[in-house]
Image (cartoon, rainbow, N blue to C red):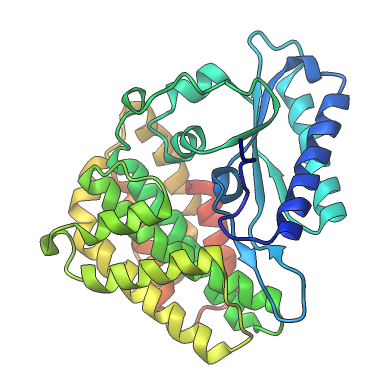
Length: 351
């Protein structure tokens, strides 16, 4: 029986490097005094699905391009306070990031029941559908079938689009600061391509597609009727390029090229949002409890909107208002440091 891979076509040295990191992380988890309370530590994301990115540069060994994203599942009942577990895993992430040269991230600890109740959240459903258990119960989610997984609601699609368009604002700020290194260029290119993938994935959420692997999602997009989105052919072409980038990123310190790619991604994302605004806005109407929370959040950031001279968000339309704000920032003639600081404050308060 063949060993599952972390990448589709990375060389043996890269697979061995990733395997060594994963085994080292698992060994360190086993040493935790509260290890008995951990049901499983799970590698998610592209590397957990076996389609992680391969950074192949001439004259350099192949390297991971994306983060290693781990999920921590605790037993029920759990005898150790969640704060203590999270702090230990945060320190472990910093340790392995420094030691391996790859960003290692652990999500907040959750019990299995929490995940099961939130399978309509894209992050949790994708983790359940494609992952690798590196510590603990290897079959913790293996009893779940496709029939157990609910459809992803439109509000989740809107949230994904909001986060991916926020990434384009981050990319603009980095370009304004200056793209001087491969790391700078990689940051910008990664956010551009994640935005393109996000637009396609949100469209698939809207039509109820259950395609999971990147190639299957691309094929599902190609099968949609032209009425699904007025720029569907362009989206399919850019989605295909973004899938290729995700697997084998081609990163160049070329400001003009990055700027052109960024503008293309912004135009497509904005066109998609304007076309789908009504559909997703109706799906994002909050309940009464959320409405009260939204009111407080809106009041907290009103001064930031006043400084731009634009209307602030309304509690009943918070998530769509964030998307409108990102469109405003992507189109603003100059994005100053003050603008970016306000963006971070609004994102942190309202997201």
